[in-house]
Length: 378
Ligand SMILES: *Cc1c(COP(=O)(O)O)cnc(C)c1O
Image (cartoon, rainbow, N blue to C red):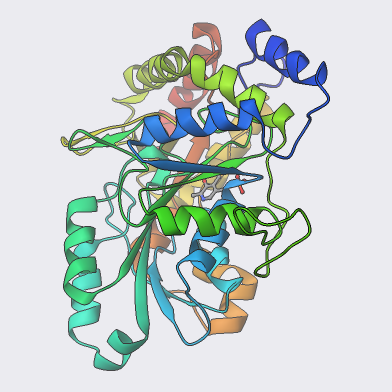
């Protein structure tokens, strides 16, 4: 069998048609019908009043942090088990990330630990201005508890829903929680624009500031070269937006295909004794981003990765802990043992090849290799 891809976008003639439609107009960027349509679709999907589409999910996080007025001297509570962008967006603005450890079943930030930390630390309470939680691997965080803490302590609440487009928590959609959330459209996400992302919010003022920050700090009605604040070029072109519109039109189908592959993996792997399949809280509905297994003994991971690699099957040790990345450890003095649950999870999780068009034969092939290790690893 040829090397399997780790992930793959799902592109049809509809995506090609809409991209070519843009290429046949003189308006390739700068906000146009495709951008507006994509924003309306994202806002509807997240149950929000406003969506502001930008050039990446990271850019979306950055302008939320900036738009909420967070800066040097402020601290924001966040998770060390995530893609690094959820924490980097704080560093861009000189905001201190205060990591809080995760729940071992959902891999999401643990609201009880946030409460304990804030309760016992008056100096920290003065610096902390917000919570930035992540819907890890598409599984929504405990938004009701997080919201209650944010209200009690007067904190901003930011949702990194870059991995959870289409998920829901207690019947409410991912991206609908907190002051603002984000979607991301890199090719391995549930929908793609090549590169891209969106800010999601109900706050009209924040939406307006984010539109300005994305477009070099221009004011809403000002002249083309009148810049009212320091901004960025975080625009999403009409070409990218067209791709996103076609993907959003097909969203139900895209998510159903991914769910079917995830179910296929779970069915084949649920009784393999040396690993666990992803677990779900009863009050969430998860849109599948990646398929991540957890080895019961993390020291087996090298062997599993090696065996699969020999058979042409790529895997990713996903996520590594953020606090142990060299520049975080150097800048903040983090060390192994600081966040034990995160470290235990980070050293034992493994993402398998996953995308909506993965066929039964490929799933059989991957799972047969994993099954063949059972005797050695149990
Ligand atoms: C993908 C992702 C982002 C944003 O990614 P971009 O590549 O900048 O679009 C942010 N946070 C998490 C958790 C992600 O998985």
